[in-house]
Image 1 (cartoon, rainbow, N blue to C red):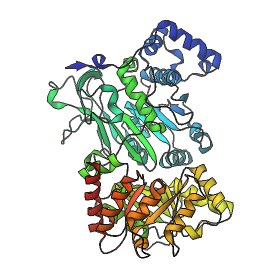
Image 2 (cartoon, rainbow, N blue to C red; image 1 turned 90 degrees about the vertical axis):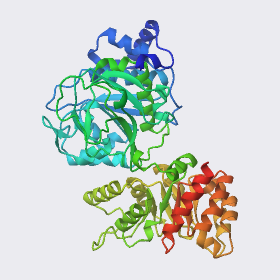
Image 3 (spheres, rainbow, N blue to C red; image 1 turned 90 degrees about the horizontal axis):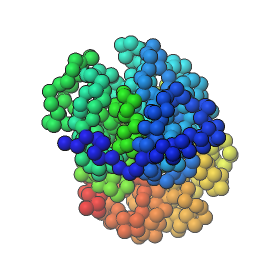
Length: 547
């Protein structure tokens, strides 16, 4: 049995290098603006410095900023908060992966402030951190539209009334993945199971189970393997008898004791790990390397698959390997909710919605930027409850006026979409469309709608950059004499999405697309009498192509 110190990776940092870092930090100005780590003993700072990973897991695509929030309410706070902040700050500085701003003022969550960050780290926060509805909406908008969210240990009882952990903001529980803080002694020995040794987020552990002592929370709803990609869990077969007294209900009927996990929430990347009670966690080299990977994941630089563990069928595994998403054209349903329900019924993880589509039966509200805060929340909860991601927003046109064009892209991003789909003949101003696609990082997928769709698609690609791609409808193309294989070979990497109307199109078209190394955001089944058959055909083809 390996202890964690036996599997550490890389090299540490000498005392001389550490002192140099301190001096450089002071001259750079951040040493005097530290968060909770400002009062740490020099010995602990040296231990952290000696354990820092030598390099980032991935080179940042751009300079990254991480907000570390340290507030506790009606709780004294874990002593490890300052240690964690120091470790993350020094880790980011040394590897160049990110810079850190730490604080405990809820005003940091005003939208205008959050815009300056790529991710938020809830550092062992306990209690009802803030109740301002505007601040809460700002945070969920930040995450759902593509920001990162990370939490450790006490974050599973953040935004609860403490003591007692009485729920005050259920949506934060969805984002972080679970609720609860029941545990045994704070040095409980746990043998850790690495759920998927090849997963990027657990690469620090070298693929081997290990043992470690800390305080481990047993969590409750909304925890579910139908929502979360579990990374680490307690290996009950390798552990001895229960250790020490129980603080709260520590037994789960399903005996599923997850320790770390990741998930998507809209476009947002979320991560949680309970290993963070004791300060010594943050001078453990392997755990720092693990947390560095987690930080780079939520910031957007270290890609990792996060399909929920409970939904990992062979077809889904194939999609992850290919980098494709299989979904359903929910925008053709009567309502957005009906589209989500159909995707859930057919067992696919992705759908689309149409601007001007009714949100739900019997309601007058359409799916556009006039949705209220409560209506957006209802859509998010509907998606989460179904286990479905909204990948594309279909618009009837792209206006030529600046505000109208911006509004389409901004709304799509706010609702977690990767694509705005518009008929190619209905884009009023391509230069404006490109600019807002770049600004919002939502790709424009032009749907050919002319008599010669392939020529139209090629013209769109030739006159626009990578922020514009093509939504190719195989049925529309076939009706005009263009086989899916020909279209997808010609368009290749410019394919943003493929719409498949029947099983034979999947066999022919997807094989051609893989041959051209196409990376569509979405492979979507049309809404017709053969939808279920088409989806199953797509799954069979994807499994074959990924093997």
